Length: 140
Image (cartoon, rainbow, N blue to C red):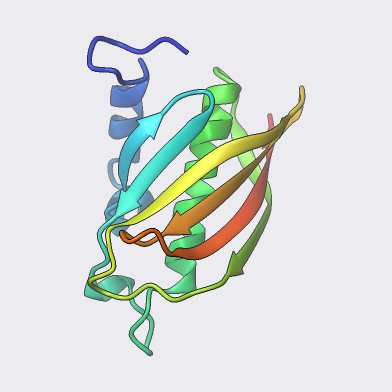
């Protein structure tokens, strides 16, 4: 995958613009790296990301992991629209304020003409695994 002189994917600015006003921006997700092998995003845990027992809400994990894998699917299928058809997550440890930023890393598992399946992990700043999962995206 070619990158520009800053080492960023050529569509980086397009994604930044498309994210304006979306859940991605509302959550405060930040794209750190993106190419046709891997997408990495971070989120600094804020009070509004927590559930009522004071840990990172599972829905925040899910939204961030789904979006990161979805961006990877978009990179792998340029010019096509991709939509999530399956999202499977496993929560294995909590993430709390002060453990961030949390990092999601997405990588492709299988790519066909009509679908992309990816895997993602969510780790704390110290490298503790909090969640992992897979997503399948239909190419429309």
